[in-house]
Length: 91
Image (cartoon, rainbow, N blue to C red; front, side, top):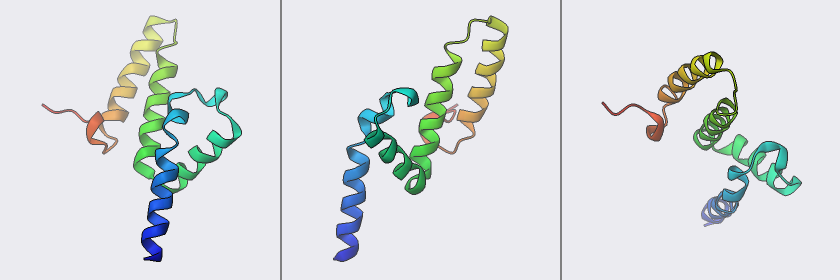
């Protein structure tokens, strides 16, 4: 039963971190930074998904077309090889 309480508490912490994942890192509050750090330590798959999302956000800000193409190819490769089903190719 103690293990169940621990798991439920961790799930609650992750559930309440959804808003933090939608924000850019520079706009996170200290409490949100702590939640992201907790996820980084405890949920590798979710952490990788956040990294992939953040990399895409940054590459969409690129002004140089050639640099953006190159970075997008790199991002597509990284996302498709991330072992996260939502990012993998389905063909």
